[in-house]
Image 1 (cartoon, rainbow, N blue to C red):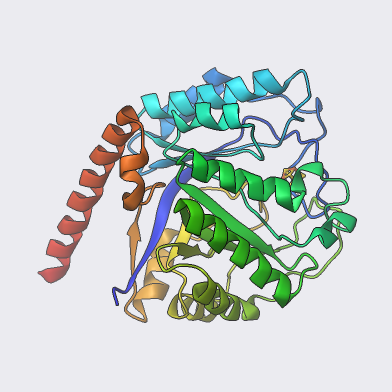
Image 2: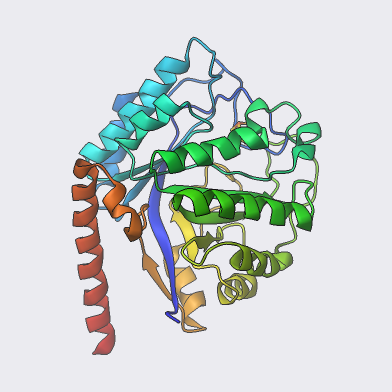
Length: 329
Ligand code: SF4
């Protein structure tokens, strides 16, 4: 077994925080029309400042504008333009902005190396509780997105939100749904296991998910999902090193995008990758960088994206062989 754990050096761009859903655990959203949207020139200035700083992935993460809103086309165009901008500056975009129409997904495939949407949980009972006022959290709507991504051959990231009122049976049902859709299309590259972690801005008053349970869920997920799908755990939410190591020993192989700030969980800063590498080294795990698209999907990418990805693969290879040489001295 190769003792390798990966992470993606990433920066998150937020076109808008406004969102028509009201998930009660949310620490991200603002009311529609209560905050300004990011402009392309602001984004360009930020992205230019990130050049040669080690960032590879630009995660475009947005609050959701209602599909029937008159602002939807402008919102979508901004997302598309941000992806194009990131690409033109040599970064690799990954978009996660809620459920999209087939036409929207098809267009975004041209400017993204992968895309994502958390399935969260398949159980409809959350629609009576934390998702009572979150129309786009209807489980079958989200599962349809996974189907659509497969049909369009988009390398995809999804995941489970843990500790929002579901049971162990619900975890299994959600994991089985992901395994089934992957069996059909082969496009799920990674599954995030995200423990609910309360923040300052949310309205829901509930205890954090008990992270001591995380290694058990990793083991369950590892059994249900095909081995080609990486299991990701967010290191800023798994604050105990022994739990992080236990998750890795039971089958988690990725720590996700690590950047300056976690927009979804703003109260939990990302640890520095060097600190994480040290923790992992204590059990002979090596932490290495990865791209936001897994190599088995390179052939699915439009040619222009494939070319940028090839260059990054080469750079990472040179980076890694340099380190190994230094390490062997
Ligand atoms: S969790 Fe996502 S979908 Fe729910 S309110 Fe927050 S931004 Fe909107």
